[in-house]
Structure formats: structure tokens, C-alpha cells
Amino acid sequence: MHGYAAPKLETVRLGLIGIGSRGSGTVRRMAGIEGVEIKVLCDLFPDRVSAALESIRGFPQHSPDSYSGSEDEWKRVCEREDIDLIYIATPWRLHSIIAVHAMEREKHVYTELPVANTIEECWQVVETSERTRRHCFMGCSSCHDGMSAVVLNMVRRGFLGEIIHGEGNYIHDRVSKTEARWVRDKENHNWFGFRPWRLKENINRNGTLYPEHGLGPVAQMMDLNYGDQMDYMVSISSDDFTLADKMKELAAMDDFYQPYVGLNFRGNMNITVIRTHKGRTIMLQHDISSPRPGSRFQLISGDKGIYHANPPRIATSDEGWIPGEEFKALVEKYTPEMTKKFDEKVRHASQVSSGRSYEVVTASDWRLIDCLRNGLPLEMDVYDAALWSAITPLSEWSVSHEGTSVKVPDFTAGAWKTNKRGMDISVRNGGTTALA
Ligand SMILES: NC(=O)c1ccc[n+]([C@@H]2O[C@H](COP(=O)([O-])OP(=O)(O)OC[C@H]3O[C@@H](n4cnc5c(N)ncnc54)[C@H](O)[C@@H]3O)[C@@H](O)[C@H]2O)c1
Image 1 (cartoon, rainbow, N blue to C red):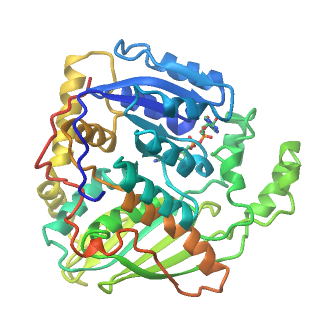
Image 2: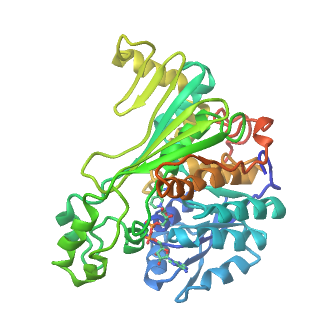
Image 3: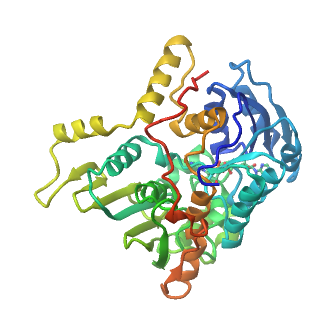
């Protein structure tokens, strides 16, 4: 499926499953892209579906049907014949189950992170995508975001030389500022900043639970799956220093948290180190429970220089970071065609249609639809989805074996040695989709 181009779709008929925090934003983002027709909105809760419907009232091209009220409604959505693309933003446990079911029913898939929770599920989505010839795209918007795309271009054009090492994190403090969160979403017991299912993912598990945002940009800069491949990795975790105590604190205020007291929570910090076949290294950090500023794509270093994301800066020797003006000029020089083209579409659409905001639309969503409409390979494929998602169960295994090294499966079955580079940031083809 690497490099695979499905037949062109003039209109991409979309069914969205899981209209919670992320899914409701996706409805609004997708509504503003030319050639998208939202056919179905599906969630367990009817009020989430109706709120999403309300949010796209201003777009007459969409009049989706609503599905809600039972755990299995999503199956009926996948079975409809008038849908091309199924989008999945449910809790993690359902992603691969819905993705496989949708591909079996001849739908392309766009899933939130991760595509799968176990190595078996990773193989299952790969095998299903290959057999059904349906795309399975795991949306990792961090890969298209501002500086990640610029640095990818810099790497591809050789500015940092031969790439040696990369770092990516999911550091996203969910523990501090409890008071503010408590007041904001008291009814849903949502102090955690995520809904309870996501808190539960941190019980009796220890590893890097959400590596894709930090790993994706590094994987692309290293051409993993098309030029290099992960070989083996090790992973260790600290103890939990905050979450168990936080549960006691919360239970004293809200009985909802009583069942969480005394449970075994994931350690604050997980560090995973991966080595590639070409001898490069990647370090991933995961911490959602320590009070500290957030971080995702962190750095990439080569034999000619280094880019560091926090704050964004570049050095080409040990003599210090390149000064501000020179840095700005480099960013301008290496801003890829994809970013320029997308920004131009946003500017144009904002000028011609007053009152609508296109700032919410992401380059990642725009390019996904653009590739489907132009019959182009997608910028990330099922092998990227499987590889990046597999790191979580592998890290859990390594942590539970005192950091023992573990081989990373090659989901391309050796094709990484000859696969052509993915993600066309120079937009050699397509780029024709406007914002609607
Ligand atoms: N790419 C990003 O930047 C980003 C940001 C936030 C969340 N996410 C991802 O999005 C996904 C959803 O996260 P969220 O924060 O929106 O969670 P959420 O709990 O707010 O939303 C999940 C929704 O799925 C619905 N759901 C559960 N079971 C269902 C079923 N059987 N059928 C239909 N609907 C069902 C729930 O009712 C809920 O509305 C996760 O994978 C998360 O990691 C990605």
C-alpha cells in the first residue's frame, strides 16, 4: 500500500464516528474543505451529534444523518454504500476494530491516534488494508504543523546533513491547575483534561502510551518505512509520584474518584530509545502527570547541524545558536510548497466568504482530501500507522522486563529498502482542492 493511489473521488463522502472533543472539531474542519460531503455523524450520545449538526448549519452542502444511542451503531454507518471515508475519533480501544470493519466494507479510513493497541491489531490493519486496497490513514497533524514541515524540508534538502538522532515527546501536563479544570467541567468529572476513559488507560499500564505526535515528524525526517527502518528499542519508566496521590485528593471532593484510589498508575516519565537499521537513534519521552510545559517534536540532529524545538532554534557548530534574523531567513527559505499552498487557500477562502473562519482547517486534513480527490498516494499510509502505534505495546513489554531490548516488527516486510519517499511536501501533484 505504500505509494498506492486509489481511484479519484470527486466528492469525498464522509462518515464520522465519535463526536467528542476531537471529533466535534473535525466536523467543523472537514465541513470547510471543497469536495467533502458529510453524510453521517455517529456518537453514543445524541446530544453530541446534535451539537455537531448545529455547528455546521452554515454549510448547506452538508445534511448528514444522525446515528446514536447504542454501542454498535457505527457498524450500520460502515455498511452504508454512500460513504467513501470513515473517520474514527472514539476511545483508543475501538480504533482498529472500526478501521478493519470499515475497510472490509470498502471504505477508506482516517483514524485518530493510535490505529491499534496491540501488535496483533497492527498486523490486522496492515493485512486488511493490503487485501482490500483501502487506505488506512492515521492523522498525525504534528507532521504538517508549522515548524515540523519546515524542518522536514530542511532535512530533505540536506541542510542538517546525514541525520543521526531525533527526539520526540508527549509531555502534556494533565495534573496541575486542577481547580480550573474542576470548575470548567465538573459534571463530567473532567479535571483530568481528558474524559475518564483516557485516565483509565493509565491504570495497570506502564510505557509510552501516546508516542505518535513526537515520533511522527522524526520518523519522516529519517525516512522510516522508505529508506530506513526501526530495528530494536528499549524502554524504562519512573515510578508514579503524582497520579495515585491525585486520586485520593479528588476522591475527597467527588465520590466518582473513589474507585480510582489505591490503583496502580503508570509512572510519571517513560523514556524509550529506538535504534534504526542505518544506525540512527530516536529518544521518546512520555509524561502527562508532572507539572511542566508541554513538548512534542523536540529535536533532530545531523552531521551538519541541529534543530531544537523548544524554543525553535538551529545550530551548525558548538559556537551557539544561529541569531534570530538568520534563523527567520532559514525558515522562510525552507517553508515547503505544501505550507505555502495551504496558507494561500486559507487566505483566499477567508477573503471570499465573509463570516466563516478557515483558521480551524489543518494542512493535514486539507491534503488528505486533496490526495483522495486527485487519486494520489496519501502522505501517511497504513505502515506508518502500524509502526508508530506498535511502539506503545513494545514499550510496555520492555518496561515490564527491566528495559530489555525488543525487536520492532517491519510491517513493510522488507519493502522499506526500496520504497520511494512518502509525504510530498513539494506538492508535485494535486494541491487543487480549495476551501469551501
Ligand atoms: N490529533 C490530535 O491532536 C488529537 C487531539 C485530541 C484527541 N485526539 C484523539 O481523538 C480520539 C478521541 O479523543 P477525545 O479526546 O475526542 O475523546 P472523547 O471522549 O471526547 O470523544 C470520544 C467520543 O467517542 C464516543 N464513543 C465511544 N464509544 C462509541 C461507540 N461505540 N460508538 C460511537 N461513538 C462512541 C464517545 O461518546 C465520545 O463522544 C482519541 O484517539 C484521542 O487520542 C487526537
